[in-house]
Length: 400
Ligand code: TRP
Ligand code: SF4
Image (cartoon, rainbow, N blue to C red; front, side):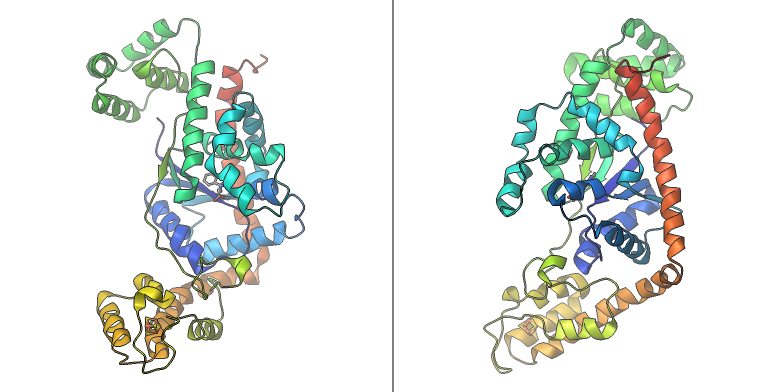
């Protein structure tokens, strides 16, 4: 409904590893070339599960930002910020909480999953139940339409869409909506107005989804509308409500599974990770001692790449020629595992060299990251405030 805007967040986990890079960061870095982007560290989200482990949060947040910048996020292109530094997120979370049915929250699949997976933690809190509402607020407060996330987060985006729809339904009513909408149509100019009315009729009378999409594009290309009229015209397409909070879409880009050194999912907490700014000697040592096909005990035993996590790294780091070489050499025992690992080691070192280089100025001057993030928080806050003005107004909290 507004311009394309990308938003995503990550919990503060500290140093980033190559799993984060290939799973999310690389995609963010690509997106910043094409779209307006906002990326943040979701520090309040950490408290929903780890409310009693707060001493390390601030260090981990700064480490993460250094890694984000080192990986190639560019603060002149993307707005980087800390969730809790934009307290409007809390205000919108509270307000959305008023219309979030508890049943919806209990049915979010991660709710029960996490309670089972983190059985040793006390997750019977209001904050934990409500954390998808907070995630919805994170997204809706920027009226972001694209949210790059992994498969595990799709149910949260779906909830965000439902909450936005419910919000617009309840608070998008205004007296005299129809007259105001019709007046706004006139402001499009006669040609566009005619086209708008045709497309609206095609959607409303025949359920023509393509017409709806075209009409939205037409509105997106129209510059000289006030915010209120935009909301009315988007809302009028579908019904008799303003669209104050547009519904976002998940942006699912296929991300390779990055195995850890033991073949399990890479994770900092299980100690099987290769970090983004790892010393080259450490990268070499870690890959050289990495788990391989367990059946390949001796150099002369042929192996099965399908059972080997190193093969998964070749999928990420090697070209087809190298992969053919691996497959043949492994299954015929033509070489040993150390030979096989060498191209992976080299590719990781090559990937990381520019990261070390970019990180240096931030390590030399820790103030630099602080000031980049302070700018980002300020920019984010301005955008968040624009939405909140509208939200408060729609909810009757304007007090003029
Ligand atoms: N819940 C997400 C995760 O655990 C992080 C997150 C918080 C997020 N708020 C967000 C992701 C908003 C996308 C958009 O990975
Ligand atoms: Fe794995 Fe390569 Fe060893 Fe085969 S040769 S088991 S693919 S490390």
